[in-house]
Figure (tube, rainbow, N blue to C red):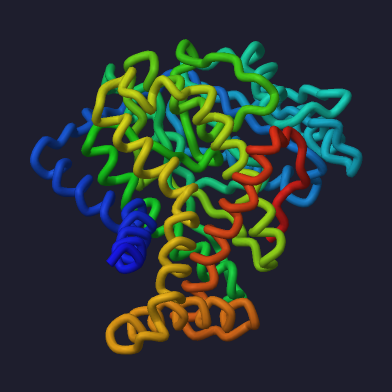
Length: 378
């Protein structure tokens, strides 16, 4: 009886952040929606870009922002974090022709968060937009982001990331499906009040709400939490689009997911007051469900597998259920081996996410932090 309970409880707890929470959140949002009051406004905007050895992308990225169809004043501030590949020269060449562009050289290399902290001291915009060095916006993306700030309760807006995967590679397909799922959940969370997680490459903030971060903190996670702590909303704007190349190499995607999970765990520790209702019970429940329990879901999944392995020799329904569990793992293994069938590639990406969380938790418990890393390679 105990083993059967552990099996079902493990499966239920492991699946809750991915299935149970979104369903309950959608129900609550339908019962008490909080719409965002949007309007056509055009305050001065500062676009901040942190780059390390991004010569491959930086020209297109900066010019993409300068070409935005935005009615207000706009500036683009680029921080080169000790780049050695010519990134600085490319930005300087653009700045020589367009005074809206400024370059800041960060030396020695100190990471994205430190670069953003400094760029914020240079920004003059009422609204600050955060872009990755390889993020390309649709012409109206900045306008769409800014329209949400007509609502006085909104402090932070995140847009919609679309991964471009022209060759149909395994990780890219799984990553694209995961982002579709995340974006749908962000729409639900916006109706609840605030989004828990953002992308970082297509985000906007009221400049007055910026709180400087320590170098090891993850801006994509800590900045929105700081906004909620100040009593403002974090919302999702699906019409604000950016495109980025999906990673096509499993090891690169895995390293990125480990890094994000590790820094998120430290951020949850730093902002743990939010886990205990400091910003209201609803957001605390969201943070537990969407983030912490998801990062830890590999633990109940492991408990369920072990319980199932002990129960299976008895045959009957126990063997059938354990067999289905093992089938999912087998599909993940086939996906890792290159099988392109949808069940295999999605199972593979789901397994990759959970394995990355396990590695991140081990590093977190060892006290490891990560400030520097290499750029994503599509």
